[in-house]
Image (cartoon, rainbow, N blue to C red; front, side):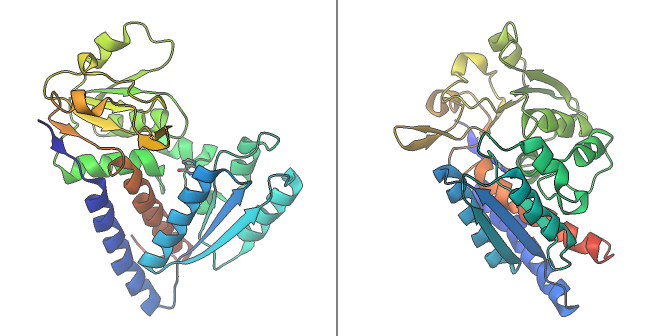
Length: 284
Ligand code: GUN
């Protein structure tokens, strides 16, 4: 039976640390500020945005929400971003994805001032991660690394297999594991012999977006299994890993919910705090 990796616990610890540092900044008259933009009425995005706002309140940040209608034009959205880029009291700007299909996500991300890009989605910040010289790490992969660190799971020299090659999770996940000296394989929908490759993994990260995709036959005995999936099946949240069967083989496993999910918001708080420090020339 696997040890359960408790994302709620580790996220609470991260948020506690952010809250303590925020209290110190406030003594200097600095309040970190996060602006969250949501376009349209996607119910999942609404839940995520509400949770981000709640977390801001809990750690002592100032936050603002821009809820814009689904018919918002690029001009309108870019105008909001331009205004937020100029604001001294806003340190982080996050535009919740996905955007309605008529909007150009790449152009929107590109417009956010790179020093306020707390998602670390902009090409500049992605490039900085690539060379290992970064201010912000993308929240979900950074959250996974924080979980591994908390549970003393050493990545150095391990076979790390990431399933999924998205810009938000798969690709940066591979890079962060590589920075910790893991031997990284990134698999995707065209990968041949997927199960065989997964069975070589000491650390297996599933970021596929398909419920129960990773089954026990794809997992080596004693592997660490990280489930980034957030799928809705009959209204119930479930991950990419067939938890009940994989849990019997893994040494560590993240549950869904309560694993990687809560970490994402914790890391967003960390990035926003970092942005506030950078904007005020305060050493980290
Ligand atoms: N949609 C799903 N995850 C994320 C995230 O981490 N950031 C943003 N901006 N949108 C998302």
